[in-house]
Image (cartoon, rainbow, N blue to C red; front, side, top):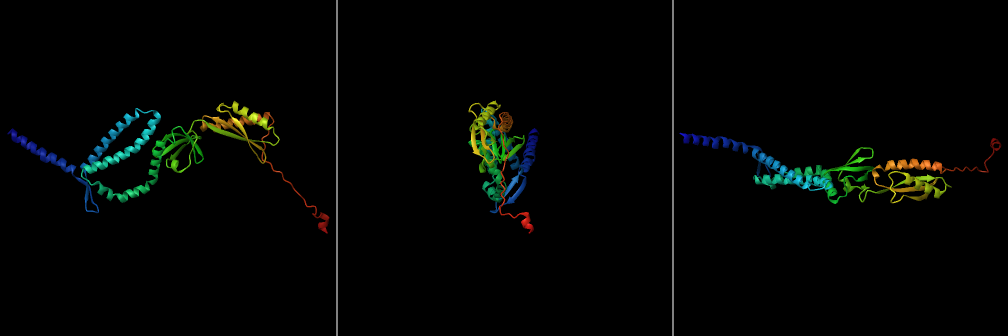
Length: 307
């Protein structure tokens, strides 16, 4: 009696429960025929398999990223994370294609059937791909680092984040400038801190003709030595740059370690120069024009005109 019961239970499990599971697993969600007559079927089992493989791959990649990044310094860690994001997408795509191939789906048929779709997506996302490639180049060749002071499109900013698609920089007026990475490949970029943190800046000033030029140079150098933020070494220097239309043009050149805040340094320096020029009777002229009027000697008088 017991053996009969066991056989019935076993038969129920095999035919009913396991059979129902197989029916659900093989249930076709999507089925379509490609040009060569092949039929591609997307079943519930295939969808679940892809989801399972995707989750396992995500866990493995996360563990791998944590293991590698834990051995890197903070600066290299940010670069590795950006590169790893790009690698992660490639791994996901590869794993999914391998899973589909293992499940019995001809990948070449899928790629052929989706060729037109891929071309359309590629054209639509062309600029996105350019941004990603630009981000990879930036990270690999180290042409741009977090903390660099850059100038693009006439705006100066300090880079605080480099992502795979965009780079973010904080401007001098505390606004965030979002720059697509492809611009770093196709356009000219000024990197103030690529070689070193020290940059040379200058303040231009004109003095009236007849001024003592040696005294002007002495006053300008004294102003530079008194100004906070200007380096003592290399020493500031003055260039007599030109004979202008209305003034003698001088340039006070100096070195600073933070070019991001140089407008503040230049402003304070100009205040001091104006003050010291007044104390030393050095005039900063405004544009002047001499107008010469000539009258013809043969011009008729009023009496002659009345006749």
